[in-house]
Image 1 (cartoon, rainbow, N blue to C red):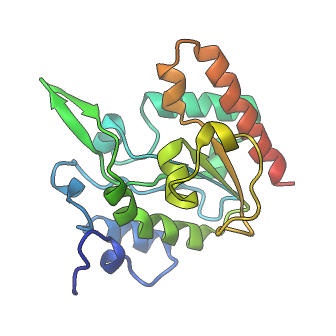
Image 2 (image 1 turned 45 degrees about the vertical axis):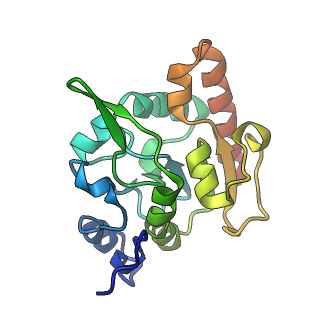
Length: 208
């Protein structure tokens, strides 16, 4: 295997089998994040989900558990999905970056926004997931996910909450919204939570 610097491409097998992709991701060395992370955190959920949710990266809880969206932001997402009338058992959740990027402060590991080079390096995994699932709707949670699939010009607050159909990911409808962690950071959590729920209802409506 010839490694392409700064890309996961050589590590992504030529298959649409999610289980095989998940197993292969454990050996990914496409960027340096694997060196410090506990483990890779691949996507999880229904194999032929009609909706795929894409976040930024695993957090501390996800890195330790090896599962996406199981920490505080995941609990916000669960509550928002329930409020919007979407069953989490029917969706697939993943991240633009599969390893935890962090900085240490004492004994704590604090989230560090992944570099653009790391987002680009990990993109082949996300691409493979979407090609495997072929969802009717892709929900991009936050700026990193939006930039990963729509390009660096994508601005969450400008395009959030409306179905985008003329993208490179057509025929999937794309809906951009805030990341659940933004709700936790907001001064007015209720307002941000309402924004998130409203956008998820748009995604639910797009299925019909």
